Image (cartoon, rainbow, N blue to C red; front, side, top):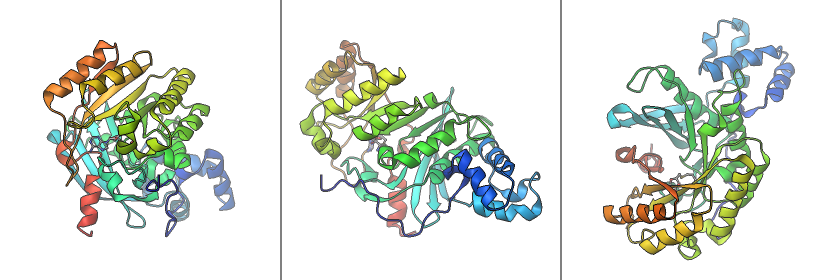
Length: 369
Ligand code: SAH
């Protein structure tokens, strides 16, 4: 437990407040404080959330003399692109962003035939210390603000509008919290960003809660709070093994909340929302991929409304662990299916660019940039 970090280190310099950090009522109150009519915040929201534009100078419906004041108060630049790398013929793109204090985070945009998904970060680094995860190795730098989380989605939506991925312009349809960080450890900011993503236009991006996946190591207190919200996102639990003994090592927070407690919290969420949840399971050769573990997992899940996502391990630099053999992966799938458990092997989109595992930010930090 000593290694787990719940409290983010104090921020050195607070991130500027952005429209996306405020509720609709707070936006209006702030405008009035500034002596600006409240309806101006609606205009800003349309530009930002509907047109994915934060360049106030281009807003022809805002008088010139108000532009700088509104830009400062509501649309400060929160994230700046450092670099992008693409693979899969350009259909997967990883973006590295610099925040106002120099901190780096990454997001990954993936275009499929039927949807376009952005995988976003909720923290810079992570305090959960899972030994197979690149982000976990670097520790937690700080929480992101709601504005910084939302900005990754808005920038992805803009890239879709502009047709930056092959196949022409498209609509951003899905958001997954599977980039850097543990979303449940930055609960309030993550919830505010989810409101921004789901609120209908003009006050949000109008993406349905069902198209958002919140992935967690299993912070039961966070799952319970989520049960009380009326936002039926898809919940994903990073289980990685069905037995507490190994999970204490693979997902150290397991020393606080055991497998059974995490699953029963997920069940409660499922009963409240009617949403099937996902079990994330990174298959690690000879560590968690044995037939007996598949059997134990099958028995645990056979009467639950859960879907297993098997992820071939993406080895982190210097790690002794690697992905499972093809035959072990196949056997694992078959055993689960034998229990009637829904299972898919996740495609390894972005593997060449170390998608979604904190590796680009780690490399950049080492290079001292
Ligand atoms: N902290 C959250 C969300 C971020 S990680 C969580 O743990 O759920 C998103 C998913 O990627 C998690 O299921 C995580 O366990 C998995 N992951 C992390 N490192 C990985 C690696 N090296 N190979 C495969 N999956 C990995």
